[in-house]
Structures are given as C-alpha cells and as structure tokens.
Length: 367
Image 1 (cartoon, one colour):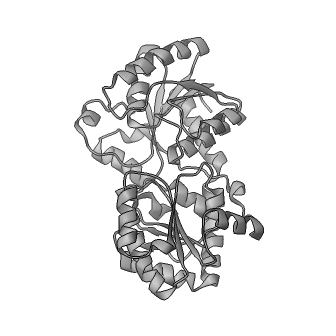
Image 2 (cartoon, rainbow, N blue to C red):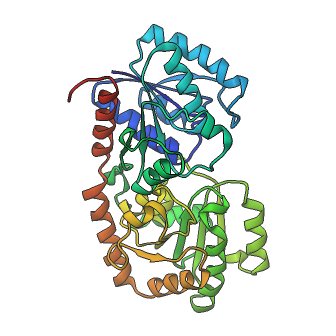
Image 3 (cartoon, one colour):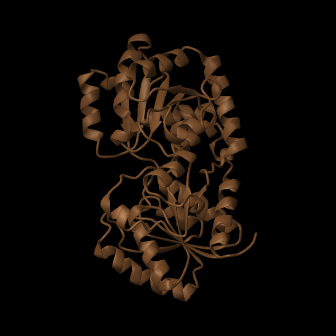
C-alpha cells in the first residue's frame, strides 16, 4: 500500500510519537509511507527512518482555514502522482483535510481519535471522521458513539503500541550524568511528562509535592513539557515556596533519558484517552501513580501494576507518593508488573498489524 499520514505538525508529543511508531512499522511491513505536515522538532526522526516528508501549510486550528484548501491542492497532486491508497488523519483540521482529499481524489480516509473532543457546532455539522475511526481506548469509542453519534461499526479500538525494548534501564553511570544535566540532586525523583495544560492536572501534583516535601525533604519533582500553563505553574511553585525542589524542562525528542532518572512517574490527568507517556513509563519498569479516568483505568490495576487515585485530590496523591517513596520493594514490585503488562498487552507490532487490517478493510481487501 501507499499510505499518506497527515498531521498539523511534528513537534514533540503523543501524536508525533504515535505517527513515528506507526509509519516506521508500516514501512517495515513493506508499505510506502508519506508524512505531510508543517514540520516540527520531531521531523528529523522521520527523515532518519526514510519516511518521505511532504511540507504543507497546515499549522492551523481553524476548520475553515484557507491553509486547508492550499494543503488539499498540494496533496491532491501527490495522491494522483504516487497512487496513494489510504489517507490517515490525526487531528481535527487534518480530518477536514482528509475528508476533502477523500471526496476529490476518491481515496479512503481513516482518522485516529487520540482523546476527547468538545461538542462544538462545526464538529456536528461537518463530522469528517472518515470511513473508519480508530479510537485509542474503549472510553474514547464510547465518547465518539455517545457524544457524536458515530456509528459503532465504523469505530475500531486500536490501543497505542510500545516498543518495550527501547525503554530498557540504563546503567547507573548514565543516570547520574543525566541527573546532573537536568540540575537534579541526589534525592528521589517524581516525574511527569505531559503538555502543560489544565487537563493534565499538574496543579494537583504541585500541591501534593508541598506535602511530600514535609515528609521527605530531599524529594524532587521533574516536570517535562511545554504549554500555555507554564507561567501559572511556575507561580504556584513559588507561592508554595518549593522552587528548589521543582524542575521544569522543555519537551524532549526522546523520553527514554528523562524516564531513566525517575523513581516514580505520576499522571494526574482530569481526562485521558489512554496516556502514551504513562505507557512509556510503565514500559520502562517505573512505578506509576495516575488518576482513575478515561483509558488510564484500562492500563492500571490498582495495587498490582500501579496506583490509582481520585482526580483533583492533591491529598490522596501526596499520600500515595510519600508511601511509595518510602517503600522501595513496593515500587519495584509495581514497576516490574507494569513493564510485563505493557509487554504482554500493548506490543508495537500489534498496533501496526491491527491498523494495517483497518486499512485493508477500507480498501475492501480480505486479510
């Protein structure tokens, strides 16, 4: 097959990681893969893997933007010239673009829903989901069918896949050097990797950290990511007088290094489709704490491969963090089970194979 992926950008984040894994996986299965976007920090990794990159002016959140029309004209020519079989979109504006390409170029369009959408007017009037919609978890499927009336038979649940071997533990020397590079001290490290958005719950983690430090003074919080809440979060840290124990670093191209220095990973989301960063932390063998929301509940079995806490409950979160930092054996037990759980249930090859089957079904090919 000739497959065209479209995304607004290739900056560091969950969608970019998903696309890189999927594109390289499809290429290994013998397909020709193209990625169209407005570039980004992660572009070099696609080029290194031999993925054909097509620049388009799609960096917009407006569903009626002229950038979508300009992108459509450029990609229409590409589709005809390279006989593209499938167009796969990954964001709202690229869904609109994919719908237009499907209509004018007569190619199947499939989209992936990576989370939860607000019920806006244009989404209802112009759904643009495609012939099939990939939902990354059962809660996302329920959201699509319940809130947007997407026909359940057109939705296929395909969980994100993780390359567990990529996240094998590094040696102690490497960890020590990475810690120094991030400005971290010798104390235990609690970490989160997520965009700085209110839905990710950073506020509650920072509030919890204030109580954790009263019990474990040398604990450190490493916050990895960028976003519109950065200034607000920095102010909160200062107001709680914990600035010496909280470290902000920008998004990173590869999460392996930052995960390697953490003793505990926390994901206090208010909503979460599945949680790719959480899955990567589990694949690393890290002990994890997360809120019992969305797709997270399908990842964590409380007390077996991680701990679940209530959303927006800084007190319960601080108690869980403190208890685990004091109990190395429990952390090791939960982390080992987490790694095995991801290896057994969310292998990268499974995601690629199931997505390939969805493509073939769109094309009317038996597999």
